[in-house]
Amino acid sequence: MPKRPGKCYRKLESRPYVKKRTRRGKELVRGVPDPKIRIFHMGNRKAEFPVLVYLIAEEAGQIRHFALEAARITANRFLDKSIGKENYHLKINIYPHHVLRENKMMAFAGADRLQDGMRRAFGKPIGTAARVRVGTKIMIVGIKKGHIEKAKEAFRRAAMKFPMPCKIVVEEFETPVKVP
Image 1: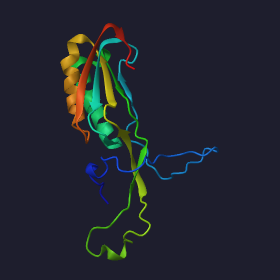
Image 2: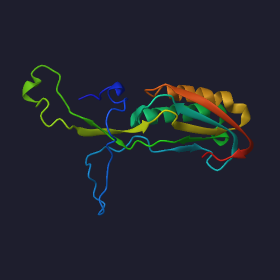
Image 3: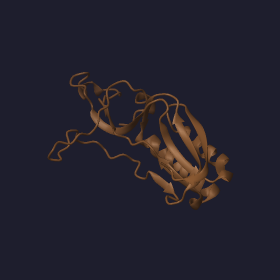
C-alpha cells in the first residue's frame, strides 16, 4: 500500500503518542520504524559565527520525518555548494518523537473480504513526526555577515518541504557566538 499524503498528519488533533520504556528497558510501543533523519548538525561545528538565522514555525502542526530529512538535505546542499562547509553551522532543533498510526484500508475492487472496517481501528505505527507550536525554532544556521542572503535562500527552500508556513529571522551579534 502506498504512503498517505502529508496532509493526513499535519494537524495537531490528538495527544502525543510516543515510544515509552519501562524500568527494564522494554518498549511499550512496538514496531515503530526508525526516523529517516539521522544527522542534526552539519557544517563547521566548532566555529563561532556573528550571525544566526532561524527558521520559525508560524502555525502549530506536525512535521513528518520524511519532510524533516528533505528540508535538511535541501538546506545543507545549498549552503555547502554556495558558501562552503567551513563557513556555516546548520542545526536541526526538533526531533520526531510522535508515533503516527494508520488503520490500513484496502481501496480497490474486491477488497471487502480483506478489511474489517472500523473494528479495532487503533492503527499500526507507520512513522514518526515532530510536533511544533507557533514560534518553534525548527532550524538554526550560524554564518558570517557576507552570507546572510545565501542562508535566507537555503531556509526558503527548506520551508517549502514543511506543511506549515515558516518565517526567517536574522539575529546579528557584536561578538561571534556558538549555535545554541
